Length: 442
Image (cartoon, rainbow, N blue to C red; front, side, top):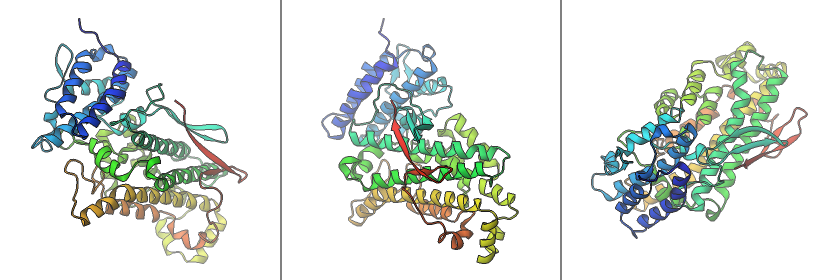
C-alpha cells in the first residue's frame, strides 16, 4: 500500500523542493518536465482522499498545491508552443493517488472541502491570507484586528524560496490586516442606525483615518527601501508575476485586486467611477463566499458619506453649489464633517501611495523596456495588473477617490486641518497620537 502524505509533509516538499526545482528550471539547469515528474512521484501519488481531510487540512493543501499548480502552469506555457493559448493542457499528465484523479478535479474537490467557497485554482486568499502566519494590528497594546493564517510553522511559502517573495507576501497581508481594522470600525456604522455625527462615530472615524495613514506609510516605506530589503522590480516583473499564469482560458489569476478589505472600503466610502461595481463583480468567482456576501450587502446599500449628508440634511449636489461661506457655516454647525473629510482624504492618499508603488515596480520599468525595444513578457503582461487593470485605470480610480463625496469642502477645510502627528498613528479621544503596530504573530 502506498504511504499517504498529510498536508504537513507536503508542506516540507513545497518549502524546499519546489523552490529548488523552480530555480533550476528558470536558470535552464533542468527541463520543466522534471517538475512534473517530481511532483507526481513525491507528492501527488501519495495524497489522501479529500474526504479523509479536515477542512483545515484541506485549506493548507489548497495553499501548497496552489504553488505547485502555478509552477507547472508557468513552465508549461513558457516552454510549450501554443501553451499560452491552451494552459489547461499543462495539467494533463498530473493525476492524484491510485485512482489517478486528474489534478484539476482533485484541486476543485479540495477547494470545496474547505467550506470557504475557494476558487478552483490558486487565489489571493490562499497565497496571501492563508499562506502567511497570523498578522495582528495593535493600537496602544490593544489588538484591534487579527488576520489568521492556516499554518503555525512561522514560514511563508513562495515560488522560488527567495527573501524578496516572502517579504512581498508579508507586506500584502500586513496591508490587508490594517484594512480589516479600518473596516471593523466602519462596518458597524454602515449596518447600524446610530448617528454618524455623534462622538462614538467620530472616534471610530478618527481611528480609521490614523490606520489608513499607517497603511499609506507602509507602502511609502516599501517604495523607498533599497531593492535588497524589498524586491527588485526585475524580479517582481520577470519572476514573481509570471507565476500568475492562467490555469484555464479566461480564469482569474491571483492579484492584489482581489483584496476583499480594499473592495469593502471602496463600497463603504463610495467611489464615483462608472462600471466599478461591474469590475468588482467580475472578480467574485475568485473571492471566498463570505467576501462575496459582504460585498453584495455593501453594494446594495447607501455609502457612509451618503448617509452622513442625509443626516445633516444635504447631499453632494447641494455641497457643490454652496459657496465658501455656506460651507464654513455647515462645518461650524456639524464639526463631524471635518473628521469624515479627513477619513475620505486619507483613503485617497493611501490609494495614491499604492499607485506610486505600482508605477515604481511595474509600469515605469515596463515603459522603459518598451522605449528601449525590449518589449513585454508573453506569459503575464507587465503592462497591466494580472486582472487587467492598466496604469490609466488605476489613475482614474485614484482620481475618483480624491473626488470623494465631501471634496467640495476642500477649500474651507485644507487650511484648517493640515496633516499633523506621525503618519503611522491614530488619534485617541483626547487627541493624543498612538502608534500603530503591525506584527507577524506566527
